Image (cartoon, rainbow, N blue to C red; front, side):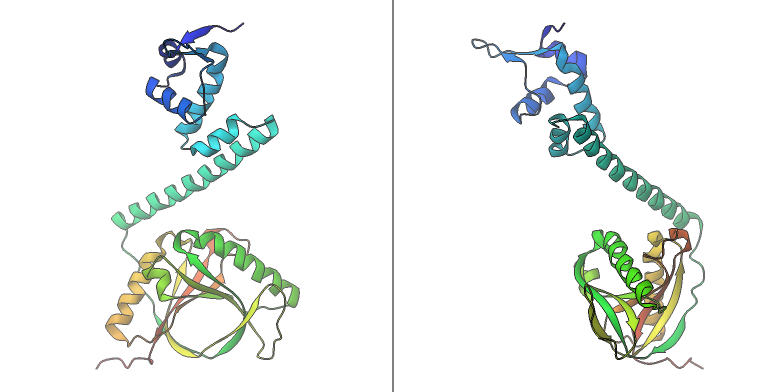
Length: 273
């Protein structure tokens, strides 16, 4: 059996404020069972309590209202559960990212950045399979997973053992979105294949350092290398390169990542004195 209750009583039953219940009614998420025609008073049925409790829990998990509606209005249990699983997976990814940031902050407070080892190297020009996109900073992890998964698949199919990498335009840093080119070096006479382009990367001098592990503290490596270049080198125009000795697409844990950061310079500097 189900009973009819006032909005105040329903609020007590569900721990949802009257203001919140009014809002959910206005947006069509949780309508009262009936409204008194003369007084306008809303009345709910006790059978609606589980739905209201579900909504409250989903909102506590910061699920957007549009997704909450999709759960509440799902035509069957399978559709509802799939929507819930997708949101929980997203929350687990965000929680893992939060843990990484907290660990990084603790590291900054307690551990100084290890002394930077910088190598000066001339990289000759080379041809590469490439994937070029305008990428937003917030989406770079997903882009790298997809791009280097594809390039890794191509490398395996064609027996390519070269180290993949990427170039990052200035706008990627200054505007939080810009051109990124993922590349996989190939033979100079390589012909095009489906799904990827071909790019010829120019030769140049670079100041290079190695970052080991996940990218949580990557900005500290950039800061240290860029400061070194500003103090000891002449900066050259052109995008920064990253070489993924071990990285996205290799199917390893992030703790095993090994990334070379290559900062373009005009020439190999002559040590003072």
